[in-house]
Length: 334
Ligand code: H2U
Ligand code: ZN
Image (cartoon, rainbow, N blue to C red):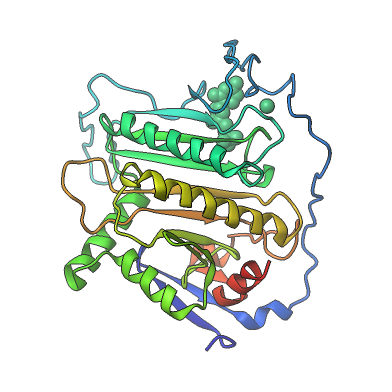
């Protein structure tokens, strides 16, 4: 099967991906972006995230020592006083009000670090901050999305190590899909989809990139991006605030392992978009939900050759060339 064209099913999204392993032989005359591996200082006077510097709107950052959070000066979501009015009047022209908050999270005061470069205790401080943000914003909002865009090719605007948190009064589309599909699986099988999946991946040992006693990073069976990974707990947990201190330490360890492998793959600071998915912030127990993180890196064959999700992907369905097993093996062996 792994050398023939086939399709794989993504049970989390209820979507299919076309896998065409024979295509890796094709000639490539595509774009070669040059990777910028130049020198960067620990403090950059022109960076809007470095301690003590001025941001685009004139506000001054404090002299923070570890992490720093501020409300995004160009926020996509804004808190509304009365957000629940439904303005919809026509099935073909539906609208609803949206309310929320967007914040920027600086991972370190040091301008030239990435999460992969940071020590495990310092990564643990970022995890603690993610948890505090989820706890605070989760009291008010339905969904709290933690994410990081890294690298110019992922639209990241600054080299300074940072991520974002967007909280909303609505359940965004992907969160809604994952909720429905996990609930369906739970009804049919009596255990969380991603807990069952992690157990089977541990047994099969075909797509594991790295693991420790609490966590597992795999190239999922249904991966669409070439070196996509899914970070999964080996224990039952619906949300990040329910991860114990010990499990937060082992999370810092596996994050570091995974990100160092990514950087070594093409010998470049690996670009990606990553983010956390935990149970929606409502009072029901969400037994079907299992916390996880997605890593979506765009690189395909080198520091400069990216996978483009265009043409067939935009119009029909996702497609990949080499298999998830091959990608996992490349990362595992580093
Ligand atoms: P990236 O994570 O994609 O790099 O985005 C950084 C965010 O930082 C972006 O959403 C915000 C932008 O609006 N920002 C500020 O809030 N203040 C600034 O001075 C510049 C950038
Ligand atoms: Zn900086």
